[in-house]
Length: 294
Ligand SMILES: Cc1cc2nc3c(=O)[nH]c(=O)nc-3n(C[C@H](O)[C@H](O)[C@H](O)COP(=O)(O)OP(=O)(O)OC[C@H]3O[C@@H](n4cnc5c(N)ncnc54)[C@H](O)[C@@H]3O)c2cc1C
Image (cartoon, rainbow, N blue to C red):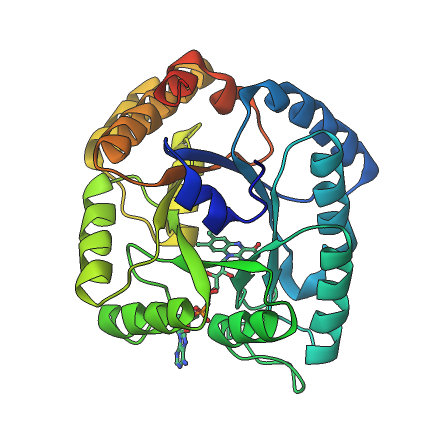
């Protein structure tokens, strides 16, 4: 039986799930390149795929297009990411109508980051202030839609405190967030602490770790700053030693992620979400595929 929602998939799964995250390319050439990546990934049979949504709805049509391409090539269910940035309630409702009309029953419900050039998130005058409001809005209009929500093992950048961040995460789950996908992290210890804290605060929803296989020291440092992830000194040392050898750096990154996945799966996580950044290489690597051998 096909399970249309991610919560159903997680509940029915006998093995940990594997999911990939895509972002909408800027232009038609990017879309064509992405179609090739999608075709390469079809045989890896991920349990679901997700598509990000750009600041202020800047990628609205392209996010829908990528969802459409993924579904057409058989990569589903698709999770459409949605943010509160720059949209009124009416605009969000109109977009949800289109998403629902495409047969999509999964939304990653987010507040979103401030648009480029703006330091602080500002709610649209007729819109929503936090992800929890978006979860409520979606569940009110489309109770059959499954909402995922974001969690931050190393605390969200704007949070008043780690405790308040967990409390607001609990609000999102209590409002209908069916599962949590985490921000990327490179040190499993931070994930295990986060999971323990969530459980201690009564958050029972499945928590899916999000991982990005690093491909270079530069990318690692950029992502770590952007996403507020701590950097394990051993990984930094290995990537530093790789210098300009891009193949060696990619292999180091892949080995690191595979090691993370093995440990996380052994610790009973319900799945692994891979931030593949529209690249197929890591997902096609035999060592990674072996972790999910069915
Ligand atoms: C898995 C994942 C996928 C993502 N996908 C996208 C994407 O597709 N597009 C995109 O633009 N961004 C995406 N992001 C980034 C995300 O939009 C940003 O991290 C954003 O700054 C916060 O979004 P949120 O949904 O976690 O917000 P919220 O849960 O609303 O939290 C935002 C901040 O407000 C605080 N807070 C929450 N509720 C309250 C309250 N009631 N009162 C006071 N403070 C409160 C929280 O502690 C936190 O600091 C993603 C992040 C993750 C982890």
